[in-house]
Amino acid sequence: MIKATSSLHIFNSLSGKKEHFTPIEEKHVGMYVCGPTVYSNVHLGNCRTFMSFDLVYRYLKHLGYTVRYVRNITDAGHLEHDADEGEDRISKKARLEQIEPMEVVQRYTVDFHQTMAAFNTLPPNIEPTATGHIIEQIEIVKSILDAGFAYEVNGSVYFDVQKFNESNAYGELSGRKIEDMIHNTRVLSGQSEKKAPQDFALWKKAEPQHIMRWPSPWGDGFPGWHLECTAMSTKYLGEQFDIHGGGMDLKFPHHECEIAQAKAINKKSPVNTWMHANMLTLNGKKMAKSTGNNILPNELFEGSNPILSKPFSPDVTRFFMLQAHYRSVLDLSSDALEAAEKGYNRLINGIKMLEHLPQSNKSSVDIDTHIQSYYDAMNDDFNSPVLIAQLFETLKLIHKVAEGEEYLTGEAIKKLAKTIHSFVYDVLGLTLNVSNNEDNTYIDKALEVLIEMREQARASKDFATSDQIRDALLSKGIQLKDGKEGTSYTLVS
Ligand code: AMP
Ligand code: ZN
Image 1 (cartoon, rainbow, N blue to C red):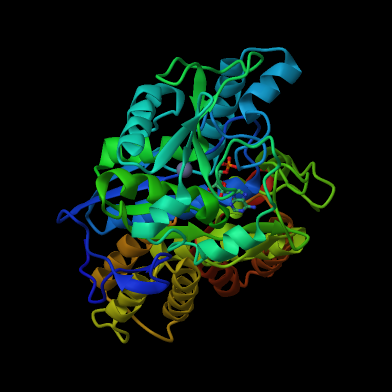
Image 2: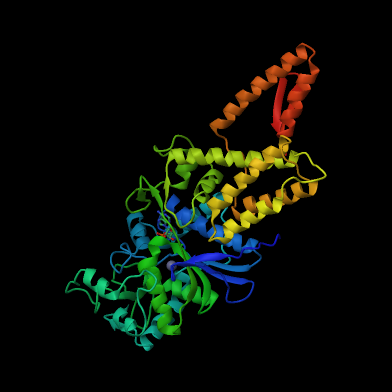
C-alpha cells in the first residue's frame, strides 16, 4: 500500500465538525450501520445510503484497518409511523398478503442481498436480525428500568426522556431541545399511556391480533424499534465503538434514542463518530416508499420507469451516486444518469489506455502528486467526487503521454496503473464493464469511417497512411483485425 501523507478526517454529526479519526483500538475499526426494514423492495434511496457506507468500509480496509462491519436487518418492531403508533410494518404486509411475517422477511431480505450484490456492495461481517436478539433486548429493558430511566404501564415499557434529561443531554445529536419538543408535540390524547409525548417505547404490549409477539417479564409483546440497534451494536462492538452510520432521516428519533438507551445503562456515550448519509431525491423530493416517490433498482436496470430514457447499468448507477459527496443531497434524473454514463465510459476507456502507454527512460511528471491527491480526497471525509475529479486529471495526463506531450517511465506507469485500479475497483467498488450505451454506436460509426479511410489508402498503395491509422488506433487500445468479411475491431487491454 502506498503511504498517504494526509490523515483520515470524518465529519462527526455529534460534534458537527470534521475530526481526525482515531479508532479506539489501534488498526481496528468497529462500525455499525442501520440496515433495511425488510417489508418491501429496497428503493434507490436506500441503496444510496448503503453504497455510501460501502465506500467508507472499503476505504477503511484500503487504509489497512481490520474492520468489523455490523449491519442489521430490521425484521420486527418498526411501526408504520416511526414513532410508537400504527401496525408493525412487517406484520401489516403479512396480514395484507396472507402470508407468514417470516415469509415477508425472507422475500425482502433476499431482494436486499441481490440488490446489494448487483451494486457490488460488500457484505457486512455480521448481519444480525432484531428477531434473533429478543433476549438481549429484554435484558436491556430490564437494565434501563433498574437504572430508573423507564416505567411500565399496562404491559408496555417506555423510556422516560425527561428523567434522562435531568442528568444527560437528550437531543445532543439532533440539536433538538427537550423544551421545544414538549412545546411542539401534540398534547397526548387521554388514551395514551405515556407520561409525556417525547417518551418512546422500549417494549410494547402485543394486542391479541398482533402476530409477532414474544413472552417477557411484562407479558407478551415486542421490542421498540430503537432498542434493536442498541442491543446488536453493543453486543458485537462493545459498549463504546468507533463509527455508527445511517441515513440522515434516522438521526432523530432513532439515533437520539439509541444514545439515550445506551447512556442510561452504561453511563457513557456509545459511539465516537456518528455518520449520516444524505438523501437521494426524485423530482426534488425525498425518495420514499410511503409516498410512492421512488424508483426500484430493477426499474433502472431495465429502463422500465417512465422517467428514464433508457436502462442504466448498476456500475453506472454506482458511479452516479459516488459523483456526489455522501453528505450532499443528490437528485436522480435521466439526464444526470446519462451524464454519469458518459463520464463512466471516459474513465474506463482512459484506464484501458494505461496498458498501452509508451514507456520512456525518464518521467516529465511526478505521478506521486496524482496519487497523493486521491488520498487527500478520500481522507477528507470520504470525498468521492473530488477523488473522481482527480482521476479525470490523471486521465488528461494519460492522454498527453499517449500523444507524446508528456512522458513516463515504465515503473511510473506501473505504479499509476496499480493505484488507479485499487482506487477504482477496491475503493469506489466499480467493476468497469463498458456500459452498453448509445455512445458506443457513435464510436462504431467513427471507427467505420477510419476503417474505410484505411481501405482507401491501401487500395491506392499508400501503406504509410494505412499503417499509421492501424498503429494510432492500437495505441488507444483498439485493435483492427482484417478478415474475409472485412475489417473489424476489438478492444485490447
Ligand atoms: P429503512 O428500510 O426505511 O429503515 O431505510 C434503510 C436506510 O435507507 C436508512 O438508513 C434510511 O435512512 C435510508 N434511506 C431511506 N430513504 C432514503 C433516501 N431517499 N435517500 C437515502 N437514504 C435513504
Ligand atoms: Zn438502527
